[in-house]
Image (cartoon, rainbow, N blue to C red; front, top):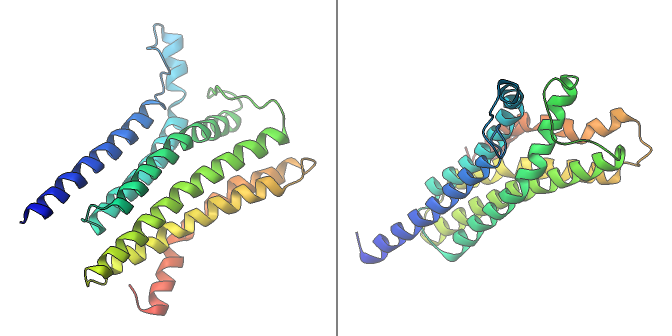
Length: 228
């Protein structure tokens, strides 16, 4: 291994450790106990009731973190483009954590009739729904879009090295789907009139059920164009 390759490996490792640490810090912001350790059984039960929302938030944070892990498997080269896009992903993740927690704590509290606690309370009705879904959708789209750019960058780096990185190009399409879904959800929330009935305000949230189409859509594309 040359000195250049060794240096690039060290720099890539430092970047990955920073990203991993940042995502670990983000998870600490979602701890079910809040800012203090419960000092009574009532507070303990209250904290434990937040587990469903915490689990959903944990999954989403891990979903994007693992996207960066997969990117590193497709791109072993350390360069300015990959470095700045990785930092941009961390930046958006730190913004995403707030609407993420508000959405799922409010969701589980509403579904349970208030049995599961939520620190978030709707005060403005449709106006609050619009703001929350718009912020969540834009943050979701920005994170997925950044991962799309990371895999696009990995594919370009491979081309410069004389390698056709089919895996990176497939991952690019995989992350393009959630970025479009998040953007579509945010646009629907912004375009819905405030006078719309309550069931219509559920549409921006139900948009994320389309994430299950990632596999079929990308698989069909691969079969049609022979890039699997």
